Amino acid sequence: MSVDLHLHTTKSDGSLTPEQVVEAAAKRRINIIAIADHDTTAGIAVAQAVASTHGIEVIPAVEFSSKFNSRDIHILGYFIFHEDPELLTYLKTLKEARAERAQEMVQCLRNIGFNLTFEEVEKAAKGASIGRPHIARVLLRKGYIETFSDAFNKYLRRGGPCFIEKFTYSPKKIIRLIHNVGGAAVFAHPGLSGLDTYIPKLVDMGLDGFEAYHVDHTQEMTKRYIEYAKQYGLIVTGGSDDHGPVSKHGVRMGTVFVPNEVVGSLRRRVQEIRRSF
Image 1 (cartoon, rainbow, N blue to C red):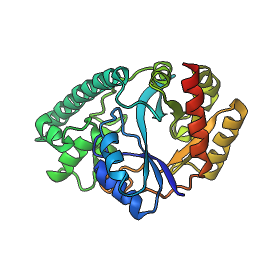
Image 2 (cartoon, helix red, strand yellow; image 1 turned 60 degrees about the vertical axis):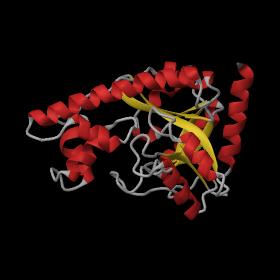
Image 3 (cartoon, helix red, strand yellow; image 1 turned 180 degrees about the vertical axis):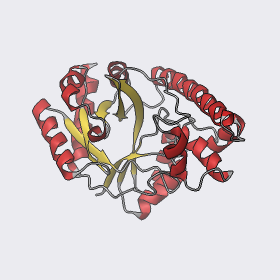
């Protein structure tokens, strides 16, 4: 069995459709995947329908952005009831906020001389939850940048001339929401957040685990978060955080070793959460 519990699709900022993600997983002989798009669950049902023909299990998931002590923190929700009305209400608010943010970024780019429109960005998003990658694709298509990464490095990264902060919910509210809709809340790629000293506070909020196995984690980081999980009685998960071929990093699916037993631990944690509600 092969596992990748962190994949993105065109429903958020990935460059492969849900169907293509499943097909790519099948080619790589990955048996269990999680569709964990940013602030949307729109790709889950489609992926699950296709996956049944490939013998692949698709775990319903979502990735939320948040901030804690002025630092970015991403929280993954696994085995969520992805069509729950409470969840969909939260996601609708986030989608609208993302669109407003993109409009501000587009206007900023126009102000410094780029001829692009929000309508072009909407078209690039194809109905997905709009993010910076969709703006980057328009800039690349129109020849304003040479590579996809240029959009971030020159204009859209934090500290760049057209970076706009996005609306987020607090980590406490996100963790509570994930539990309310039947899922487990996992700290995504914690080694990139610089929040280790605040882990006890996050655990007190109800955090269920750490994404110890991640493509951007060193071996030392992976070991550290496995130890944190043992210390607090939490679980670990892992995945490639793949965004497809048209992305800053290119295809990364299946490049991270994730032990099979993490799936069983995740299932048991979810069962405990649901019994407590």
